[in-house]
Structure formats: C-alpha cells, structure tokens
Length: 369
Image 1 (cartoon, rainbow, N blue to C red):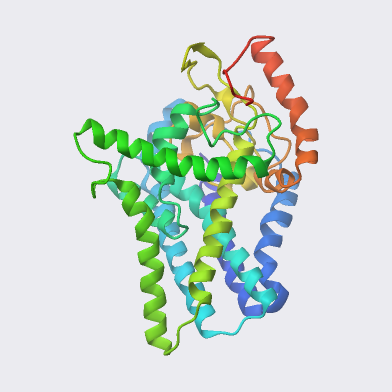
Image 2 (cartoon, rainbow, N blue to C red; image 1 turned 120 degrees about the horizontal axis):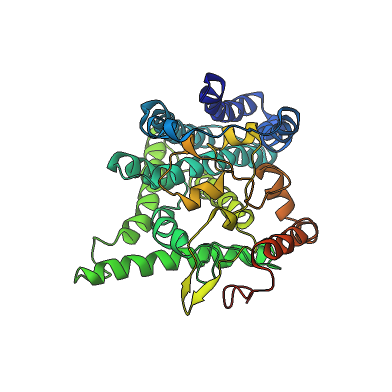
C-alpha cells in the first residue's frame, strides 16, 4: 500500500472538525457537515475516480497486523466520545435556535453514525478483546450496542436470505425495511443471547445476557451525563437527553440506510431447506470510489468483507464481479429515501445480476415476501 492511500484514512477526522466549525460559525453553518459529506465528497469521488489498487496477497499479513490501522480506529472511539460529551455540554449551556439545534444534531449524528458505527463495525469483527470493547464503547454513544451481537452472529450468518432482518428485499422501500430491520435486529439479538445462555444451562434473564447491559448502559450513560451537567450548571435541561437520543436516532438510521443499499434484493441460493450457499463476493453491492472509501474505512468494499469477515479494512479488495452501485454510499443513501427513484435505478441492475449468476433458478424461499 502506497503512503497516499495509507494516510488517506485520516480524512475521516476532518468530519468532526467541520461539525465543530459549523457550530461556532452558528446559524445555518451547522449544516456544513451535511453539505460536505453529501455534497462535496460525491463531487470529489467523481473528480478523483475509483481506486484500482488491491493489496497483493503477500502484503495482507502485514496490513492485518500493522498497529497504525488499529490505532486510527482507537483514536476515533475517543474522538467520538469527546464529540458527544462536548455537544451535550453546549446544548446544556447555550441557547440554540431551532435551526441551529437541528443542524447541530444532524452534524453530530452524521459523525457518530456515518463514521462512528462504521468504525464500531470494523472493530466488532476482531478477536482482540480491546477492539471488541472499543466497538461496544462507540455503540453505547448511539444506543445501538445490540448491533455487536446481531451483526456478527446473525447478519453474517443469514445475509441475503429471508432469515436476515438487515437484508432488504426487491421491491421493498426503505420505509418498509426500516422498522423490520430496527426491531427485527433487536429481537434477533435477544434470541441469539438466549440461545447462547441456554447452551450453557443459564437463564436468558441472567446478568450474563449482554442484551440486558446493551439496553441499560446507554440509558445509564445519558442519565449520568444529564445529572452531572445539571449539578454543574445548577439547572436541569431536557434538551440534553433529547439531543442524545436524537443524534442516536440519526446515527442508527444512517446505519440502516447503509444496510438497505448494501444487500438490496440480493439472494443466496437455497440448496436445501434452511441451508444456503456460501456467502460470496456477488452477494453484496460494491462501490470503489477512492475518496468515499477512505472516508468510510473501505466499507464500500463490502463484498470482500462478507466473504472474508476477518479481514481488516486496510486489506479489503475490490471485486469486479461483485454487483456495482452506480454512486458512492453518500449519494445512494439519499436516493434510497425516494423509493420510485431507487427502484428505477436499482431494479434493472438487480435483474441483470440475477440473470448473470443464476439464470432462471429459484433462489431463497420467501426472500421477496
């Protein structure tokens, strides 16, 4: 990996800087982060173009083990934590206009969801306890700690089948998908923990059930922060918990938008009742723009991630045979908010993918139900 690409991943740290800058400039400048992420970055994607480089196999062990790439994710965890605490302090101590409040919460949510959950996703797949801890630490700040359980033990097992609440189906709008994935993933995580504890001869209501702590810890966190700020300033501000939950909602909604576009309509073939073909690079939508890939820690090389979940972001490869999104994630999540436009852009691509790899074969039963 050349030095330009190696250091390109630092670009993500500019996004919280824009949130802070927009806040102190005030007024409509609070929407600066939104404008940069959903306006400037897609333009840069087009200008700079795709990233043609894949790591050579002999490079992979070094890329997997180099501390620099882990260090960037560790630093982000603390940047996000500090950003959230700073934002809550500002909400407690300043009088923001309605426009400023919504622009500010959107800016923080783009950081904690667009980048933060991406980093938590990366760390949650690793075997080192410290990385798993950082993953949960980040997810705590967006009230989505159950993602660590369901994504690894549920989504990666059931992806592109009717068993997965986080795999969107052909003809399913984002607005139909959203409640199915939010509530379905949460209850799936409960079932996974109950099953794990049952095998150990323990009750699902045991304190060892990580879903209990996943649900309670974010509430304890914001309760503690609210109480501390109340004591510090001498007054209670309902805006503090409201801001925290609002930015959490924006953050995990961005995650679910990304889930929607990553697997839209793709199905694995059911080779026996309840048994599906192995996950391959053709079962995730890919995109390879250089700028947005650096910004998102190679999340858009999603095909390789699902086929090889243990690979660190620095070692992920682009596969031409994977189905390709026409634009980067920043543009695609906006398109997904307009179902007729989404279906017009994506459905013919999905049919071409199915015809290319499966012909007229039946795929997963109930996947379009």
